[in-house]
Length: 224
Length: 203
Image 1: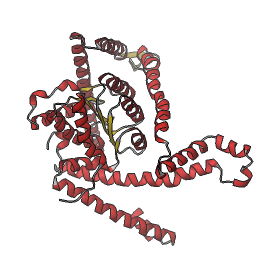
Image 2 (image 1 turned 30 degrees about the horizontal axis):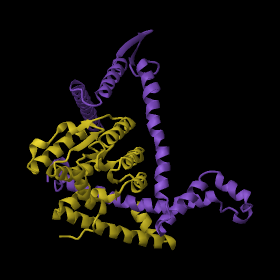
Image 3 (image 1 turned 120 degrees about the horizontal axis):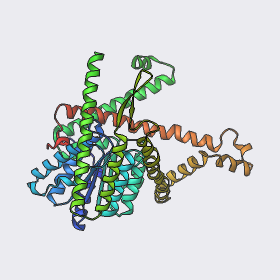
Image 4 (image 1 turned 90 degrees about the horizontal axis):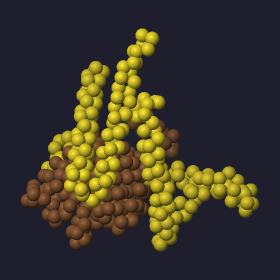
């Protein structure tokens, strides 16, 4: 099995769900403000599959407000399948996965209200977030929830790093599904990603050196 | 090829419209159930459904107008209509109010984050101070009032703030973007080849 370093945010998912079980409070999962055509939303739904499976095992209510109705339907299917795999199809509640609004701040206002009223013990924010990231994270912090976030939006990562307990930065969101599933094929793809990254680093270094000495062959070759 | 692209785009728009109806049905059903069962907070569901109905009533109308032989369409959301006024005078201020909360949350997050408890945190604190002061005219004013501007020359606080944003900050953002790009490529390959099916309820 390829070695993958430990990702604190993903290891903490188990801890967060355990905490929610002990406190008898629900878990809030947000898949971001992207539709299913957004790759970050698909990555978030992959993580949802694992979270929902654990939540089903622990009989934890999983609340998931959605911005888009197609994401809502997909999430309902993911959670239903997770409950089936856990052997608890009767504990699945479709009303916990619902559509709120396509509008960004209408969704945020509703989600903040849910956090204040239901006081979930764990908030999981995975996917594409924009200006509302800090509003969500700070409200969650004020309610005392353990918060795990993950996004590839570079402008929002600092807000999540500051306000959440754990944060998946950039590519860690995309590696999460492979990390949690422990599937050798998926773990192998992360290894391949690392190899390509090393190759890119080598090209960058060589390119910088060549440009420093005004040898523009590589720049012209790559730039066309 | 262009015609085929337009066909697919139109199909996508039709599917999106159907998805919108799906969302509306879910919204109405879930809140109607809450009102019927008189669950906690049912009054808010009632307000939501009333607001939804009123906005739909004024925003949905669509009529064809013929003026001097020229045919034009008037939608319920065109400028001057009540639907437009509801959007501009009710929804937009509400949305701006929620967004304005970010200013207060930034202050509370900064209060928690900018603590000099170790080397990295101290570095973050100092960088934040330099960038914040340099982004306003306060930094240059401070240098001038302390008579230091003649010593620093062109290397003012705003110059330093720009350097921090353009060099280390941009480098870090680009490094994250490189990783994200590779992540997107590989997860897309995994999804397209069916290796990763967990996003659709598989294992």
